Length: 193
Image (cartoon, helix red, strand yellow):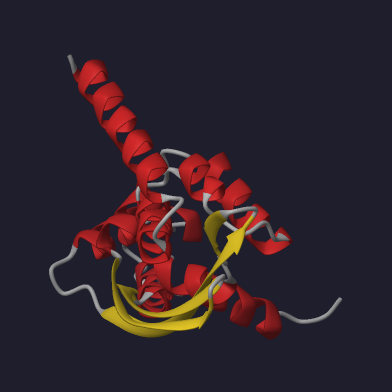
């Protein structure tokens, strides 16, 4: 029964994505973001302007399909299209307000938990992986999870007669709670070898 319901939902999503993808750039934008947040990267790819960045993003998340932490993160993210600017008959720019968990704060708390757990002589040593596995799911489920809002310009353009979304770091970073900025900042802080 569960498989039938999932199959029906996927069919409805597929059909609704097909019906909006050609005529309405705003509907394509919201459909693409919805697909990303539902981890339906195959559908999102169909309405994305090809770029090496978008391709790497989709590949990374497709390889982690079904990951509980990613799902929790995407479930918490919300967005609203706040404005539309027609640049030409083939290009629109939308302002999108994305609100998602503040992963910078979550990871700062993880490191604090790691050091506190290992400073107590009466407790067994915990690896950073153990602390991350214990703490992050709880943090993402917490009622007092700190959220952060971003205002993001997103271009939607006609490509071969179909509307496609430019999926850039500026859009992906907020949808993933600032994950890419967090990774970049940690790389900048690491010593050169």
